[in-house]
Image (cartoon, rainbow, N blue to C red; front, side, top):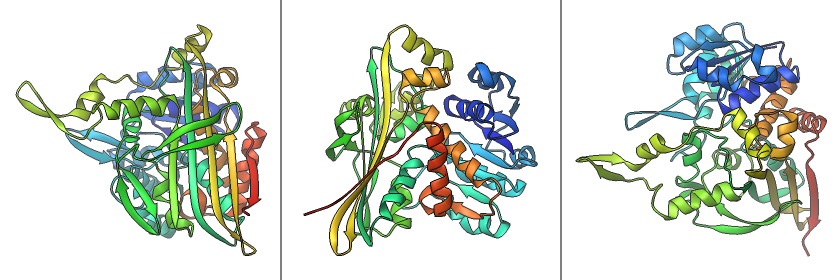
Length: 403
């Protein structure tokens, strides 16, 4: 398989390095606007031999020409770029290039916004007509979370609700950043909520719940935040309610900034001009942590450890009785990731691992159209879980009847 990775930053570089290490692809090429920066993220071990070529997602014709001959392109870019005060969505542009090149497409997140479904789904008919595969939102969360939701959903004769919970927790005086500034701030934007079969938008952090995660994590206060799962799961699973809660130090930091008004969607007066507050934040926030920074933070003791976990709980009926089915997973901690793939983070490693597991299972299968992970055929979903088990990422299952 020939693999192109578009966007070679904190996440894309790990996708490329892991693809080489696990031999998912015989050939890997990275495409990025900033070639030198991309090479700096590829500087360790397996990444050193990965070629980097200049490419810009907004130049669709040029990107399509570069993608010809590849089997898959992994879109690791942010879901949008800012052009002045306007946000330009990137997923549809990259998907258009993939269609023109006849290349399979995988991405890791959707923009969402005020729409009710992921923007990538608007291209479903065209991918189907062209016989091209696209798997969207195919990282860890979204991605594995969607697969776990579908697996638990199928335990029931009739499911009523799905709740997804995630934890991103860093312990220590240092703080590593795994996501782009755009995606990080998106967490604190209005939340798409699905209750009683209806959609509506809610304020971020408006709801909270005490969520129980497997050891060594335990009970954590989590909050309703903007998420990608809500843009596909209610559309593909027959349920009445969907909820998403996230907790841990990363979320608490964003929640504190939001409560202080720093993340509000408003303009402030700067030297006689009204400037969007978020525009200022994009200028002052740090870029995602580089590979050496992630290693150094642990080795020097500034970061004790960091954890990423998921839990999905589905309620419904089976045999006339009410029941609850859950799936949970704790990914390798930052200390363990430093051993498995130095320079990756506790977020980027599992994200890349899931995306590559999807591509490995899809290889050689004839599957056309646009699929969120919960809509993939059962044999593909279970193949992804088996692939993750081969990397010592295990899913815990629990089913109980409510009395």
